[in-house]
Length: 267
Image 1 (cartoon, rainbow, N blue to C red):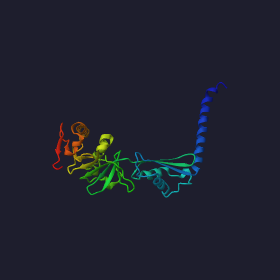
Image 2 (cartoon, rainbow, N blue to C red):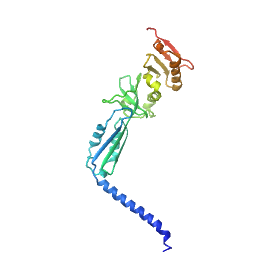
Image 3 (cartoon, rainbow, N blue to C red):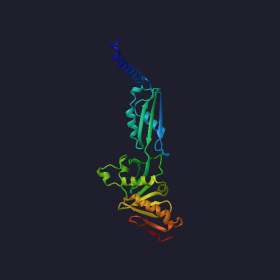
């Protein structure tokens, strides 16, 4: 008996593992046969975004052409539901999972636009925080920075795509620069409150349009963006009293170590 003692403990551990595996397998098979009795949907609408709501997600899940409610859990195509939801332009991510109580849980994260781009032909689209384009919605308009001007960006035609792609279409696009500018403005409470529109000129340069003053702020092609915005903020805070903002038609930041202001020719 003493000779067998060294082998007893490993044997019992192995036996315990096998029992656990068998029990889990039984539970999983039983769960797979259990019907779906409820569908719970949650939508992350971060910061008040309402491009898609729980009702729309529920309709998408229940009208995929395959019965969900009452279907055995093991027959529900979870990856297929996730892929279908992720194909909705306003959806950034979708997670679907089942629980032992017969509930199918669906969690959807919306895309979070930071800028709306208007092309010269009137077409428009959004760019989200991660740099993905998304079409406008007939049901909801996000209050974000607006960029207009001499633009012909592909995002309005091609649906969801990354502004950082390096194909031939995006090689001539300004969407990546627009995204970078929008992220910089949105990250600073001062600029987020001050700037609500940007105009792109025919030579690809940016002009900011402040809410107060009505002047155009020329910042060039987006290079040295951080330094130029810091210089402008200092100018607003120290160099020009609030009452005098409307005196200027243009504020030019494109020159090194100086700010060139052009006064209005008419009151």
